[in-house]
Image (cartoon, rainbow, N blue to C red):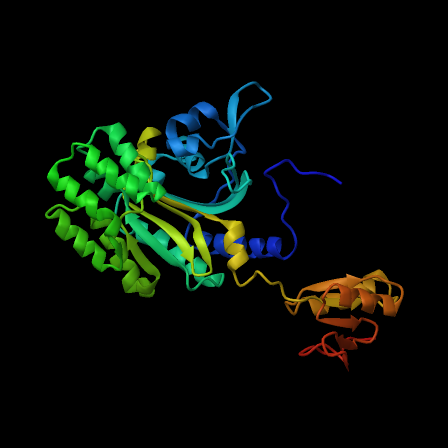
Length: 400
């Protein structure tokens, strides 16, 4: 028996089919709105990734050498590749650049999970300067979730700028520890760090309230009142207002304790949740700083979702039973010609080349097919009820 490398997995059967369906829906929708497909390199130079990714990402990179001796890492992040592509292939006049992708990403496994590879779908909107782009991406994301059957999924929205400004008067290493405690959900550690540090009273009051600032859109008004004039929430307010006007108000939750690593994200951030899955399915946000690190000006927004997880929750997770078509000792060309008429109906079709009718029927039952068709005369058998019929419902009788 062939053994896979530890942390890797083959995906097949209904789950693989569901992943392909979700991928198709995602790419079709985003391409319709001007997002261009992108196929990233499987290897990335370690020096480039190390300088531009947050430290939490860097710790998970899987280092390898290329056959040419270059220190590299397996593709741990696709966003970085899209920004590099924008910088090297598109002039300022060609921006913004809209990109969508579906590919594997690799990261060092963290307990309790052993997996080091995952399937990701995502999109990036790079180099824009005006309002509306954040909402565009989130609107399309919600549309896609609806189309794959996750109508009860929600976006948990926060804003990286809000917390970043609240810790801006604190020494950077201390600020990182405070943000790290909040990111881990360790509120006891978070409170202890606030007590230890010399923080101006104004910012201390905000930081003490941040873990409580979650709920509906009213949270934004609470946060604005707490901050006073100049509260760094305008971009998030615009997103919430736009999505609410588009009918997605009940799919939005606010959590200003939702954080990312300091210095990478620079505006609205979000995670995606489903009512049937307790963990985040993925997320993203505004990451203008990455553009500047690559020598580019402007704003950027992107997200990545775990394709395997969303497919397992989607309406495609259970594949429709197929119809088995028995060739009935017809010539292969004639059997395929007749089967083609059945295949155009949209139901999955499997050919049966068993010479024996009884063996073909037994095989169809074992494979869980919904019905069996004799291509010689068009007669069918419903395998659930064992009822005979002349043709499949809605089909004309096949010619003998």
